Amino acid sequence: MSTYFESYLTVGAFVALGAVLVLVMLGVAAVLRPSKPKMTKAEIYECGVDPVGTGWSQTYVRYFVFGLLFLIFDVEAVFVFPWAIAAEELGMFGLIAIILFTLTLVEGLVYAAKKGVLQWE
Image 1 (cartoon, rainbow, N blue to C red):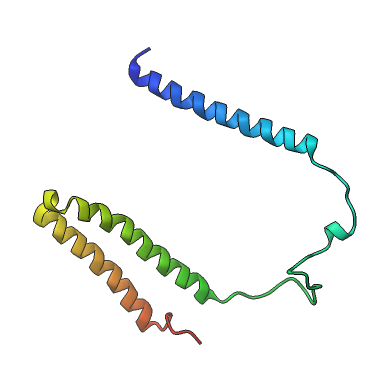
Image 2 (cartoon, rainbow, N blue to C red; image 1 turned 120 degrees about the vertical axis):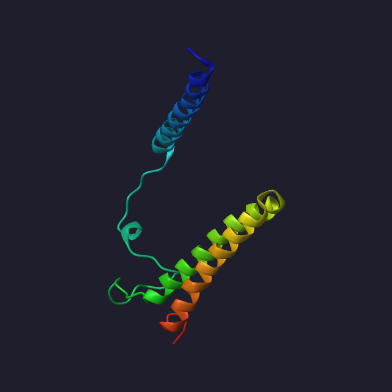
């Protein structure tokens, strides 16, 4: 067997060992845990307050929009930091690429602002 496939074999062995350990620990936990079912354990519990009404509530879409905007700019940081480290090696091509990347994200932010998504009401 070549050394190329031996390294995959090592990775596969560690993955298999990890899966076996997880299954063993779940089995041990299932055997050792106390099991005393009661009706009070099946009730809904929220911060010590008895629940009132139904459990359904509507979530505003803007929460998801803010989350997506955060994710977009978080991913931007993932791309900008490695570029900053290798900026000298990349030269003018790297500078133009990161400027275009940043302008594309700014364009999306301006579009979201024009649509009124960023206004909190």
